Image (cartoon, rainbow, N blue to C red; front, side):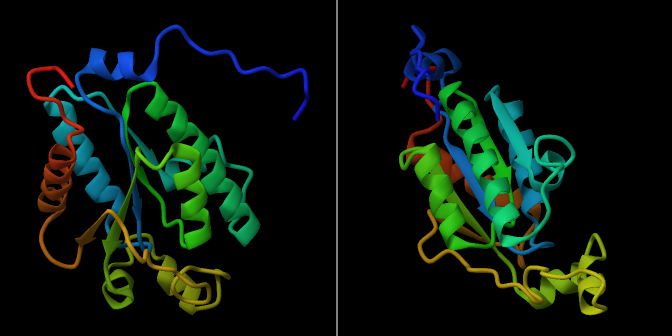
Length: 203
């Protein structure tokens, strides 16, 4: 980084933005196998929170590869850069006072730890969307497991590339049982218990 680059603080603080919105701005980091339900659950949660007047934004793994990360592949190095860029965006969202929900396979523990460090320990909420490989492969909503089994996709998580499950996530959602709406409700309850959702519009 150039020595001529200087950080400029804003007169409006993160705390002031959060108070203005009447909620804190955690980053919920949904991680799990392809087909585990991350995107569906994150969408249901955002819809629920938005209906309550909570300022949210959802960052989805496929969506960011259409723009911000469209030049990245799926090698370990590109996966790491993908997570780094998203983490930086999520950190900005956190500072802006926006409750952010991400949905990324993010298969490596080291990369998720990097995300935690970039975003900040107090804001980062690791959500393990736990579903067995058998269930995810049976769902196969994008047909990716079938292609991986046929050798058409190399380095596919869960087939010929590992998924390193979280060892101590803040919360685990078993997506093999229940509906996405029930999973979203469980996450909303968790946020309320954490104190992220202010009552009466005050922290």
